Image 1 (tube, rainbow, N blue to C red):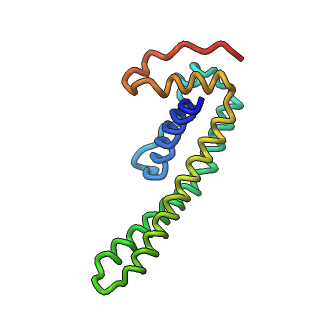
Image 2: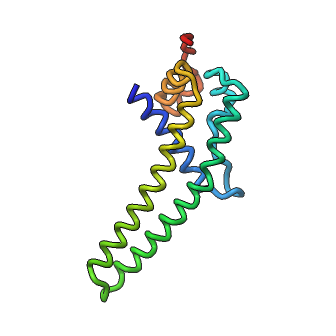
Image 3: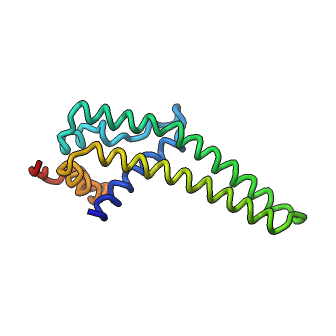
Length: 149
């Protein structure tokens, strides 16, 4: 079960990362719960799909803000490192700020995974985990649907 959770986590983190880094004109992120293949495979209800989308959309502003903050802290750190007159304690404090921003972004992503995972039934989670484990090029042949409910 723990490894299955990690598989789903990987999928959601990749999806969430795409949203944070993508601009609206460049590309639209892949939302697995809206894919016909995954909807059919998991037998997602319209209500589940709407719920997953709401969870995702609700997390996007926080993720973008966290990414903006992380990038700003990284830039400050780079400037400090380039300044030969700076004290080591100042660099240490800035490293702490960078890591705090990174942690905040990670926490936001993990909470999204947790909330999405809870929106699925146990059989849906098992099927999704099986789908995630497959190689990206091998997803054209969906795994068999787990019939337990």
